[in-house]
Image (tube, rainbow, N blue to C red):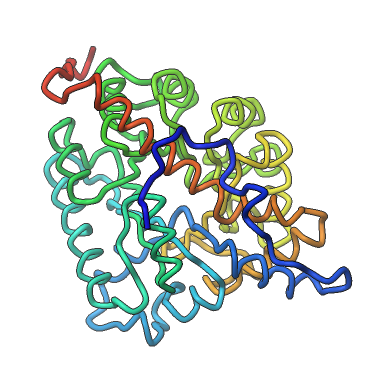
Length: 361
């Protein structure tokens, strides 16, 4: 299957040619949810197995793994077609230790995926994710990694990209902090555009978010952010940033965490409703945040429960095309846009000409 089309990506990945499942008018929402997800599976924006698996002496994700919230049987039961695997760093790790810890997790991911070929497939692009889904494999995308993993080096960024990294979180460093991006931080964003690495702004300060909107030519992600208007969590987004994200055609992936969205599936649905209303249906996605040491809502307690959330959204009046965008289409659009931007940027920006700005610049 062709990986990417040469044309500029369209505004949506669900067109009139993408036939949605036909549902009977009196079909119960859960049955409709399974039918839609069978055609348009969930692309989960933040999952934590790489760090969680480090402490297990033995595991089998294809048969089932009770020590985790995520394994292949539950992913298939829940119609999850793609996962962004977070490359977590312990608190306080920076410099060369951060680079080393990230490389170790990249090795863990490669080892795990290669050990489970019937269930998982490592992918780098939207086209490869679709190919994996068509082969009944769960696509695994590498990232987000934390900005500290770069060790303040564009060369390290290029090396991590060559190893498969596709999402980087821009927060927690001297060049991407509460005061915004430094000159070096802007160079990082430009180089990410050239490589096709997506910027994750969850946890970033408002100044960094707004400057990244200006500098980045590719869409940005919030891999685990909900609506601050509904829950005053520091990782959630105020309405003005949600509106700006919608204008920039980025993607807010609402997490299924009790502290950010609330204790029930209805609370999660409230946040999805709000983000859809403020940012638009093309700018909202899902982020399970399973296996990340965060408490989950009571209803979607593990990775097998996505159909119940989709059933709740159908009950609230979400259309089937909107659900298809939420689960699969919006992530595909962002991945394709990042690849299109990379190809266009590589024609006019060589890595040898990238300015290495002073970190305090």
